[in-house]
Image (cartoon, rainbow, N blue to C red; front, side, top):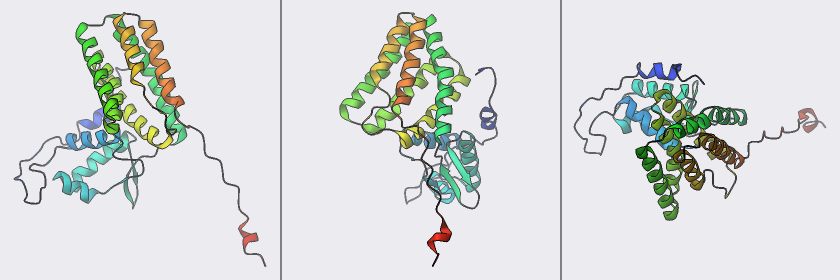
Length: 255
């Protein structure tokens, strides 16, 4: 994927009002200020990362406007942006729902990640800086601590954020934005197709990638990232559902 190309989602950012207006706190606990569209977008996307907004969840405009201190018009802008990123499905006369990726869409998400992430790991391994290695290892320690304490939502969030941190360390903002969208879609895929009792993103594989980056072994870093993505995909039951046999309705009412 050519990172010099600016996707439509990036252009949409400039069309969304990111300002916030001051407002006194309401006695019922409403927001003390109107949240900026960017903040509403970020929090909804983060909730997808943490599996707090599950596929099929309805997002009611009026309720979102109320809890964010915003307006329906601005909420529609945010939902349109999330729909553009395939995180929300807009259904005419029904409203907005958290997306439910099909098996085909799930495979396409992983195909894109395979195109992007191994070269990303290879790039970081060419000239790693001590500060970069320090940040990556600190993140993995956070993952280990979350697993030790059994904080599932934190585990899920940190697992995805490791990949986003790698993108950030490349300094490529388009890469980071693109990968953030793909990671959010991956969270929806995992929610729908995860096999029971199977860890989706083992953090020790993150450590292996860091070791290869620190050793400046770009080929191994790319290979380990490729294997890591394959491992995640293998934990999912990405199989097309069986087609139900056709029922002869006429026979049901015969006689």
